[in-house]
Image: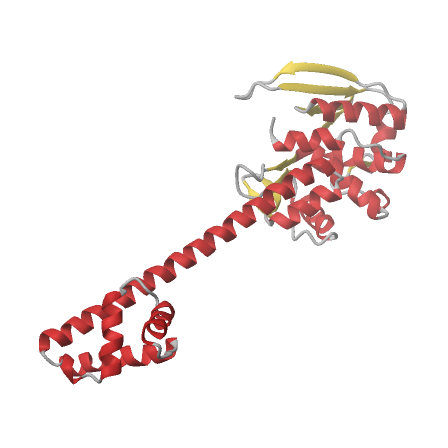
Length: 307
């Protein structure tokens, strides 16, 4: 079962009040309903969503929908659930702000979204109808809705951004995709539609992935520092050997010779580690900066020799 189905199954079982039911139905029928002279047909591939719609229509309008189950024609051949409403069609459409004076509305009237709870209810119904969210364990963070009209895409973006979700939309073929990309914002959306169990799973995976990514970045950074240290040590040893081959090594003062001798003896040590080794073995404290200064003298002599 996909993560989207898990979320929809959970949300479909929520207990809600009548005003929220009306708003939720408005979003559901607007997006997966087909209106004809004979009534309203609602089609979904999710059995929990079908039961949800059946229950909302029955409890709110006293309408018993006819349910038909068919095998789908897509590659997965999922079952398709069709609900047909033939009673109180105009009353339902008008009440849900989908019909006004025989004109079908793309965007609902303000009373459908009169307060914060109703806005959440609309987004809940909208997700149940056409929402899709990636499993955080299997792929990148992504939540999307594919809608038919641009004015409706703008309306949904504005509604989502009421809750600071940073929603955007783009045109895809002859439709419009509204989407969220940020992991934290997708988590906020799941909280908003009250998918409480799904959000626990989502956040656990998100925290694990963030921690893993941070660990990988730290490991990469540490490895880069090790590589840089090894390259610097190798360069310093080559410079020392170059002075020896040129017969000018003895021109170095005793402290610089000491630094050179320890550098060759401990080629894998960092400057800090090498300064601590010298301090312990000679009894003469030297800092990392002081050691760097001595090795710098060797480098300068090599540069002069090359010139």
